[in-house]
Amino acid sequence: MKINKNGVEITQRFFQAIELLKQTKKIRGLGTYTRENGINRWNLITVRNKPEISVLKPEWLVPLVTEYGFSAEWLLTGRGTIYKYSD
Image 1 (cartoon, one colour):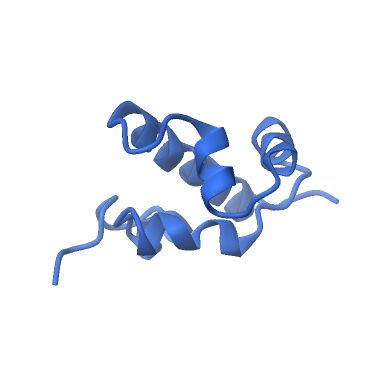
Image 2 (cartoon, helix red, strand yellow; image 1 turned 60 degrees about the horizontal axis):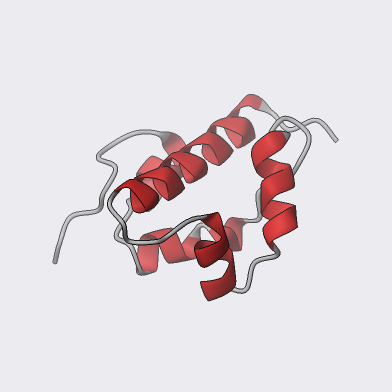
């Protein structure tokens, strides 16, 4: 399956967010994120290595928004700020 440009860009932003979490020491690494969120690590590594043919599951984005404060709009469209506004 070939993933369209928008899908590849969403995947890239997902991994950009993961890198920010690692840099800010909110997670230790990809294994921490997958373990804490019930994600198969090898599936996620495949998506990271082949974003043009591997599907990023939408539910993998949810913890970035609900637990770590990333903007859903930014993750999906690349518009707006990377972090959502505080209530």
